[in-house]
Structures are given as structure tokens and as C-alpha cells.
Length: 220
Image (cartoon, rainbow, N blue to C red):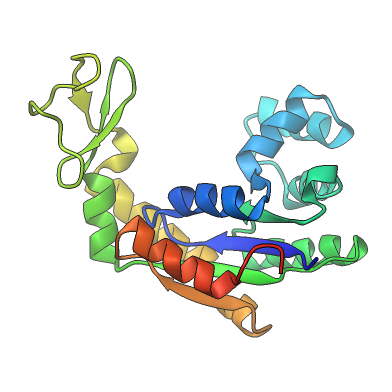
């Protein structure tokens, strides 16, 4: 059985989370979120987790070599035998190069990089339109998922508000950071012939049809 060792790329607001859940379920792959495995390594007090905790407790960024060590540990767990879906890592070309080295040492390699593409103005509309309930944290959207009563949560009647990181200025800054740091990865993986570009400006079901077409049947 062929492995699906997948990287999922796309800017904030592109819908990666929705697609990742469906890919993981249909293809039987662990959805590896760097934040989740970092917290797990710290919680389980692995050697790399303890090293990461030292930086986190000091308020510093965890260095790439420590994150790579944690990722490598995760990729040796039994549930990754058929492959994995990596989401949120790598974010930079140096991280991608280190990931390639780590995978090579395990006799593996990236088999496909899925890139979800969405126009920047559409991303700004998506992200800056989000509203969240102060009480139960249920998400809404001023365009795509409106509450029955403006400003009031359908679920608990709580107040809806816009998070600080969802205002337009912050959203554009986040997108600029993505373009500067992470977008060059598209060319990096393109050179290896691994990139499948997906038009993310459509419904989630339409986007997933293209994902399935790019990957082919599970288990083949």
C-alpha cells in the first residue's frame, strides 16, 4: 500500500481545517498539527518536550531543531504507518529542508503537497467577518453564517464579538507574514513535482472534490 505523506499549505482563512478533517477521515491518516504535538510532547515530558518547555517557559520561540525533533518523534508512532497529514508545518524553507532530512532518515518522503489558493480580498472578507460568542465560543460569520438575531448567539444568547486577530488590519498583517514566510514553500515543493493547486474560493464540497482528484483513491 502506498503511503500518503501529505503537506497541507494555504493562507489563513483558506479552509485548511475543514479539508484536513475530511482527508484524515477518508484516508485514515493522523492529522498532525504542530501545535498539538508540541503541547503533547510537553505534557508527556518527552526529552524534546522538556527542551521545548524550557523555551516556552522563558517566553521564547521554540527553535526549529527542537520542533523538528518533536515532529520526527511523532512520525515514528504506529498510526503514521500509512502516512500522515502535516498541517501548520513546515512554515519556512529551512523548516522544509530539515523535515526532508528527518523523513529521509526514516526512509520516507513527502508524496504530495496540497496548496489551497484563495484571493486575498476573499480571505480578508472571510476572516474579518468572523464573530464568536463570548459565552459558549460558538462561531458565526456576518456573510456566511449569520445568527438569527444580529449580535446574539443562537446557541446560548450570549454576545457576539470580533476577536482582535480578526480585525482587518491584523488579518492583512497575518496574510503578509504568510506570503513572506510560507508562500515560498510552494515553489520549493513545485521543484520536486509534488504540488497540487486547489481553488479554495468555492464550497467546501467542491474544494474536496479537487483534493480527492489530486490524491486518488485511498489505499491505492
